Image (cartoon, rainbow, N blue to C red; front, side, top):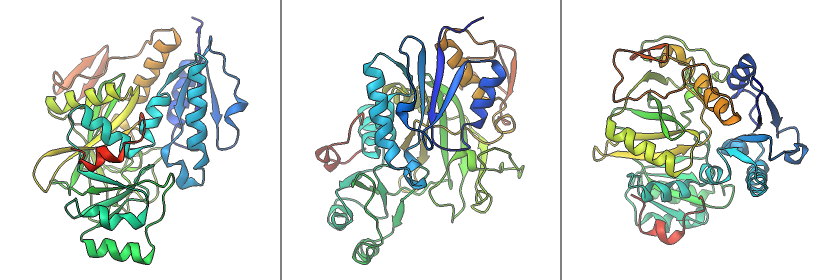
Length: 365
């Protein structure tokens, strides 16, 4: 069956999307790749009647010396949408991806608890801004990605010393967030992947004391039982960080909140992270990822291939119904062995805009 539409994927990371490309090729889905790290956005001629654009440009591109691509991608997506081009994870979603402040705004809007935060125009403002918050605090660049630029300060004296010594860099976009740090009560965080605003799967990532803040699931290359995982994105340092991962189904009320966040964010495909706080035992949502890197070796960890589900979704958007299981798993009915359209799934193997300073001044909750 011929496809009436064609997928155009714009991206810049050299390895993250190899599984997606391979699955599209295996299924015979018409697509083209535009690596904007080596070619310009304008090199792609987009036909609104035929093309659907899938944005895979990462907010962390600035850590690879490609910060200019963030603004270029935002402008290019907005222009394409004005011209009538259909997008997957389009301009408004990318706005959210590249602004931690906008993410806090959205979390507040949907009633999802987030750590309290303040906004600063630069390192010089941090000490004064910190007076409204309770230490320990983390300093975050507004344009984040892969945990880049996040630093933890236990006391105001530590923060003041870092500011005085100039060790806190002025971030891309000149906006910094200062946010209350909630150490995870279980020394772990939970990441939930969503597809079309619905739950796809959940994982729990277990942390070591020196794990840092880069918790990309594709880089976690060992299960909690010690099984080594394989992935085109598994980094050499992941094992050194002593991170491990296991399948995890969150409580139904958490799933409902996550789906509400995903829908409000217009997140076609993406991940949302939360933790249970060691401070007060409450659940805090703290990150919305429009650029999902699925867990390494997903068949081993969650029992199915989420990339195949994404391609099912793409198939439908391009005008052809998928032949592989396409219904996201409902955690409320998942049993030890659940069959979904012929696939057996075994549990256990399994700003829009910048946040205004005035809103953050009131504390994001």
